[in-house]
Length: 530
Image 1 (tube, rainbow, N blue to C red):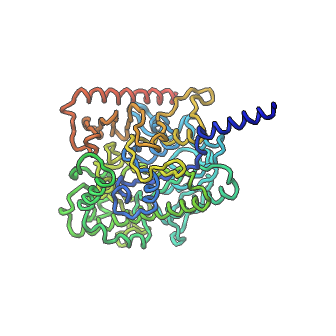
Image 2: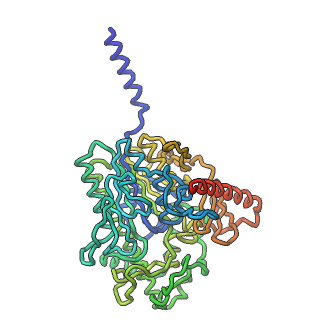
Image 3: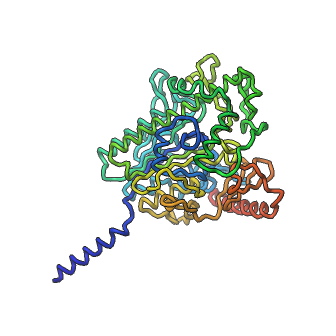
């Protein structure tokens, strides 16, 4: 009788837990693009062919109000630590010397270090831009491409923290393909040797960051597409954005005073008169300038297209492994498209085919503005064009609202806490007797099931003097050395109607909130520097 009672109790417990058990811990695939504009993807209104990302969006979710930090290394620090970059030494704070030392404090560990005790294997492929080695940071395998000036022949790259020889020009190396190749190799090894363990795969493409380097066949695909000019492309994208994303606001005019965020010596001398350094109307350009600019955007499109093709190969590998159903995929960009114009690396040969290894071109402010449609400004600014990113989330085992939009206000600081909780972990509040705060991010998992808001009091930005705070639908923003501007993003997501003159009290309160948050980060940085 005691045995029968015991079996009955056990059966009852199992049956009771069937309805309440959490889904199986997912594999996680995080894909990060570099300098991708908000509307560069087809599923976000772009004309570039991105069928693989569009497919992930159709089977998952697209977020309309997700943010990054406006720059590459701060976003990567926020992604893997779960903190604002200023909290972990990866962006400058006013009045604090060496606050941008790009050296994490001891307590600011990376996400793979938290995942390893939970049984996860972690893999990194692509750009790094953080301190320390990848293996030391908790990854089990890594290919790190540390040369951002050469897509065809990088001089600095490592495998599992060990330097690799420079790639030769005739080796058929191309960065996006090499990054995907390594990720696929890691996944194959994982399936063969660690099939019972979940994986965290972090893929950080360098595309479409300058220089504009692309494969000739990919460039040919888009060679005639951009002759209509950036004004026409912006208008076409805005029409599709209104249909696909239903963003509030109107497409704003070009800002003719806006150009690269900083100057590089001799750039105009090297590139010549065909380069354009401001957001000018396309009709004001000479025919030579128009042809030159159209060719540049064709290369940018080719780079995005190739990245999408490589993502398709990675996703197919996960499908072949039988793991796609329970793999949580995130795709986003580290900042908006870039207005930067410079010549670095191996220099620029104006006689070489555009997009080849002998050239060094950047899309510049006109096309960057088009890539960031419908938003204003660019990478480094914290207006929406610098910080708004597409976010695609795909997880068949959990997400059933296929192809839906999510309007929750999210930020890259949310990803690490979300992933860790879904993996079964809890963010620590101490490290080696050092008290640390929990990360400022929020759990996004609730938005996977429904279009609900996230319980948060604010989001905060600062980069190179550009500053912003968002509380609810109100955003206070200012470019460096310029006065505050106030926008109601519920009505005006494109930041056209500055309401500052009408609501001085709201500006005052939001500015005080921005300053108090900044001060708390300054105090933390000062304490850590002692």
